Image (cartoon, rainbow, N blue to C red; front, side, top):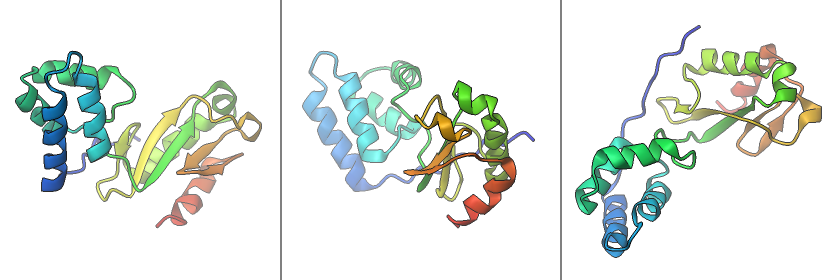
Length: 164
């Protein structure tokens, strides 16, 4: 079942905007300032939505296209917010062979989101990863710091119910 791409509305505060503008003012005249500014912006907001990228562009004079290019090139930057419950499904070899692809598909179906997205209520975000170091428990997913192993797709609704 295909998932609809949904986005969470931007909800930045004046305090966050002030903190970002102070950071930019301190760093913008430094050579190579873009990465540190973007890292601090993500620390302030939790992710880098287009609204934040636009603020960075307006304050630094760096073209928005360059900022967007950097934010999509480096895996450390997130364009979507993370949910209160961050779900990570291992798609490494051991887990994938044991069925983690089906686990991931079940999560997409139940949550209505796909890799890198967050539910509109901000409760869940879904990401894939390559290895969590629990190959003996394959297939594995994590919700925040809780590890769930030897999973089947039928177990997913019950696990998600714990977080409702």
